[in-house]
Length: 479
Length: 92
Image 1 (tube, each protein chain N blue to C red):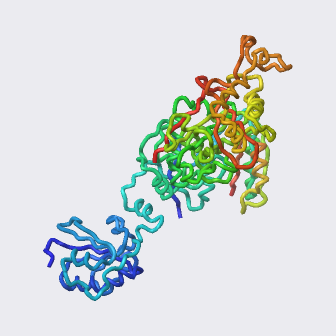
Image 2: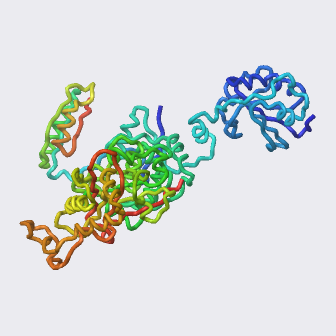
Image 3: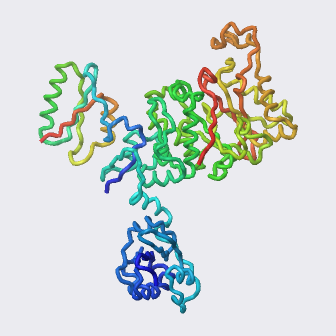
């Protein structure tokens, strides 16, 4: 017989056949003098033959005891748990209750059922109700007569499209996507230079429509945009078109289902759409950066709603952008670029790399202004059918970039004001110089797009590039 | 049932919804006077029109077809396009 300091807690539910199976065993133990506290998750009248059954229909006890399976038997010594067993395993029960002959008539083994406290969505609800979750953000009470969606618009939280209302439960679920402390400050977001916690990122990720597994990507994107070289404040404030473009590399892109294929720069993929949007909402809401306020864009571009895609690494003949920037293929990263919109390049006739480079170069000259040199950086989003031409000729990515740099280098005399009847141009002092279109490192190539179509894209960048303004930045994604 | 949201902003402004900024001065502004169609609203608005006119402020008059319903969208849009501020006479 167990000693007087030993007692037992058993958690059951009527809906579980194994719990029903063990009812007579519990009754027998209790009538035999065993100190037994039974908690019932779904029906406090069950088990009928056991006395003083506790009502745990709010699942507070189950949550506190981290019950995952019913029945669970917990052996307590002097108020502390020493052992537990789940389901019905006769020899385990016999050992735990120190009764060799216990329930000889029952089968040896029956698995238990899932605890109601771990049903999908329930752990976060219980954590919010009973746990020590301590979210710091101010609570905004929305009136009974208010439409929650409209309320978000009226409070100025939206980029113009509907946002998902950031309820506490949604934010707690979002935070489950990262191991990082919600209170961790990632940095200070311009233009108001306000501290941005992981929690604030999670709230904005909820509003953008992210799934919790996207949150680490959003956090990395926020961290990246706060790197000094990216110049987020200036990028926001400029009258130019640009906004942050997010390129995702590494295993997480596939794991969360990002699109690097057909329509990669377009609509329709939740991860692509919402990660880029979440970054913009953080800048709007935490940083206070809004059009008409510090955002002084003359026209802006549609990518300022969201501009995010993954590089197609699986079918690429080259190292990825992230590897080129010093990461390993196993690392997941974001790279941010101060990007304008998308300028298409059609070349359906080139079959050799030189012709294709001339073709790409001719279009690249239009970036910013045809007569500008070393102003904007640019990304070429090279599609599979164009990359194949380089692959078949054995060209490396660097060789393509070097060739494009060469083919876009022009005499300064063609670029000075007045040439071509155009007043715009480079300063007079460049007229005897040879000017590359892009600064060293200012031209990048990533591989993405559908398998059909000889249509690559140029994503031109902010006129103020490099030390003058913004340089591309990368950040590893940490779960 | 009320809902509770978590504030996505840096919490620099009040938790309640902000009202539109007030006019710093009436100079050069156009003021709308909206009669909601309740008795004696016109008395108040006629007097306001006199006072605004004395200040050299231009005034435009509007009326809701019935006090029992919210103003028609066209009326709201017209006031927003034509006026810098509006005074609504609740009357009675």
